[in-house]
Length: 339
Ligand code: HPA
Ligand code: ZN
Image (cartoon, rainbow, N blue to C red; front, top):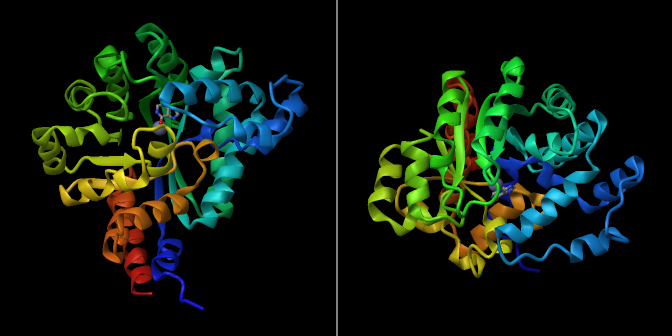
């Protein structure tokens, strides 16, 4: 028998933070089915296997159409609690110690689900995970970029009574045709309220969208950022400013952002001195959680242990945790890296 690759044990043992996770994208087909039955919501599938078979996408929009359809089963605070708790239990199994979770309030309020129903359910699970699983968290509210600036402002207004419970804002959904500039004023308001700011950019959109996210939205992180690599000057700037990129390898593959895992930008980003992290994005739809993403990219790019450790370190130094807490996790990473 051959010895297993020691990198797999390293990946499992390393403490990690997940910085790019849409909680609605962690809705596994089995839970989709259970919630559809519980809430008497009709779904166009006969079994969880049929649902999985439908998860074949040729681009971001293909996925988003199914993702918004999946959300239709989420109605009550309990539903949002169950969804979030299932993700956190799964993350704990991957030795994830800190999560910065995205949620899409507009995907729910537009269906008549109350903003506080969503927030209460998600937060209750996060608080329980902090107490019982030792996972710390930040909560990031995303604006759907295919909707209007006005709609984003209205959503921010709904969040304002709850600012001690929401830590940041992000920008997601259909990227092409919806540049960051569309939301410059909303993000200015969010920053003025003391919220952290991040945005999806350069997943399908051009390097110019990444530049706009930096210059106009003044983001602290870039979610994805793949296409920044097409622009050498921009790449250098992101490296010099130590802006964290939250890359999602399995998502990139399943949304055809890359043709095969060997084309993942992770190695090129590391080589360019970029602060890259590994994340699962929408794990129920893309076929893997954080450790699956680490393994697939380490295998395809032949990453060594030092690079795997660097990716785990970046997940904490790129987080919104205070420096002292980051340092505590980094010390644990050093211990885990020594084996
Ligand atoms: N990109 C844009 N919007 C999204 C994504 C993504 O990867 N996942 C969920 N909403
Ligand atoms: Zn995403």
